[in-house]
Length: 194
Image (cartoon, rainbow, N blue to C red; front, top):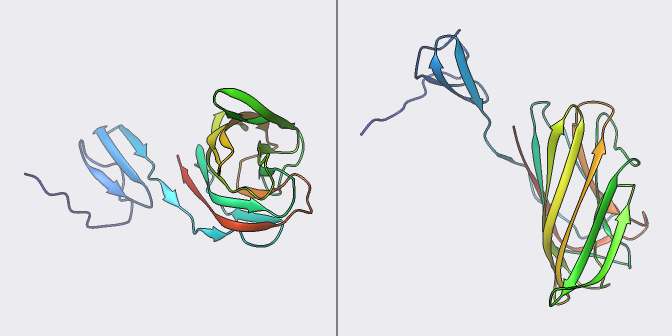
């Protein structure tokens, strides 16, 4: 059995064949001239979604290619929907093509669309939403999303969307479609990776 020991966190030139180094990221090499960057998954700090109209995650590194938004038993005070917005320097609030719906026993019961963000249906007021929404960079500054989850006792939810940002993504906001409904239960976190 082999043991790998990382003795430095400083990049010291082109690594030799087969080496792995750490400089904030992981790298694998197969020749002196070629190395592949292997981005680790970074978890942010979970935020209780029990008050306020929005939760922001900022300072997302420029190398990120995928963001996963985790909603755990999230509830709103009113009949609005959960909205995820991304941005470059500021939050982008227009230009999305997004939809979400929920179904019972295979039949679509309700659906919503949005141009203001990646929408996650919360079609039954006072019910909690648990869902995973993944946002992926497809090319340039164009991002696509997909999500699945459930509304407490109401059934399964699913949806998708896309948007093109004006620059490199550096933030994610979780808010409400009305702008006035507040969060009143649950927690929210994100994961990001290259």
